[in-house]
Length: 154
Image (cartoon, rainbow, N blue to C red):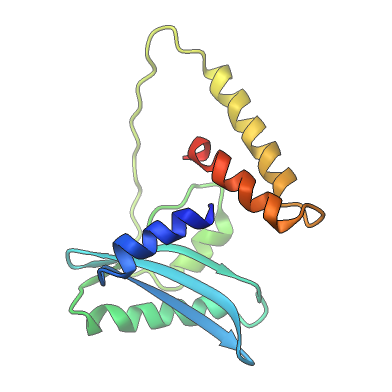
């Protein structure tokens, strides 16, 4: 996501106290982050990332999120849905989730829709993502590409 995406999240969610950002540090350096959104009686686990897999800082942040919810008077920490092809994410969430449910999606394909066009676009966007996040590509170029292309990923 482009930087502007996170700036908007901060302005509309964090600054209005409808969300939380948790950061785990090691020796004064950030090693993981978690973004949570509050709505009704629920705290939603939205984005997380880490640079350190060995010490499992995301586990620490998930535990902290479970403490933060009741502190805010909330009843539920919702880890959100996961696609079936993400077993690692399922394992992570199962460590903390008290209830797991199946989500059923329904869709409609309009007459004349060519699904291959969408598949081709998805493959192109995936290729562009891999290209722009390559360590050999300067960060400034990756940021500019994200600003231009992000709308097509959503």
